[in-house]
Amino acid sequence: MHRMAALSGALRLKLLSWQQARLIHSCVRLLATDKEILVKLRKKTGYSFMNCKKALEKFNNDYKQAETWLHQQAQKEGWNKASKLQGRKTAEGLVGLLQEGNTTVMVEVNCETDFVARNVKFQQLVQQVALGSLRLCQSQEQNLSSYVKGFLGQEDLLQLKTEESLLKDQLALAIGKLGENMSIKRAVWVMTTSDVFVGSYMHGTLPTETPFLANMAFGKYGALVMCQAADPKGNIAELGRRLGQHVVGMNPRSVGSLEDESIGEDETRMLAQSFLLEPSLTVGQYVQPRGIHVLDFVRFECGEETESPEAC
Image 1 (cartoon, rainbow, N blue to C red):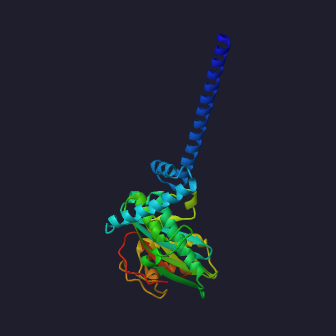
Image 2: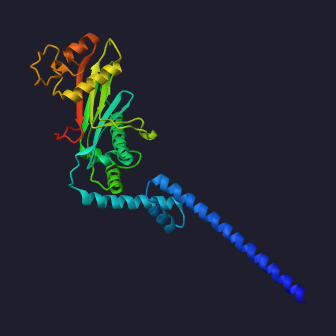
Image 3: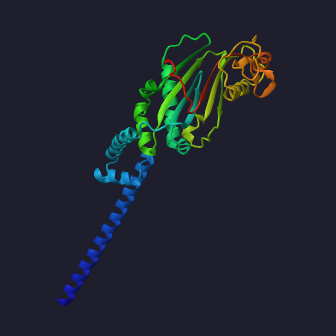
């Protein structure tokens, strides 16, 4: 009897040990699963581990509910932070350039410091402004004889909707995440016919190693030069880049004409100015033998004081 009792006790101990081991194994697996969900949520949303963990705990590891709640909180906090930071000077930031087919857009988004301007999340905001402007331009019917140009001011831009949300909501989220005041300042879009090309140049460019920003160019200065090239002589893209570089460096006020005579260093008509890259020639003397006719240009300088551009 004692022996049977002893065996029964031993079996109970083994069974208890097996159940404990199984429980521990299940807990470890559960913890591993929880960690995977946490890492996935953190990677997708970009919010802190602490906030992601809080969201998962709040909704018993329901990924979708946690993600929705995080976005709602971020937007709420973003608007609160935006209200608190409103009025602080935004003299830094980036000019962004995006080209797709026969459409080109250039935008300016501002922040308080160059440190934030170099942040990927800020650059994503610039990209969204450019994409919103591009899609708006492409959605409109244009009567093209050579090119059409339009401007978008701050109020117009804030109401643009991208695949994500309204730009004003994305701006508030960016302010909440990065903790600086920001402003979406302006955009210009250009749509051209096949015989007109847009030369572009960005100065003070930032490297775009992040794959989803590869279609963008960022800088502190940007220029677009609209040119007609019936029979161009030379590399069109390089010619356009050189003319854009001149516009950034020499800051002309108008195109002028080939008949204009230069008045010297104070000259503001582009074709009469000394060409930045070959000062012995005027811009007109440089482009004429190359079969290029300059139609128009746009220059953006990040942080400059501007008049309100006319809406498109």
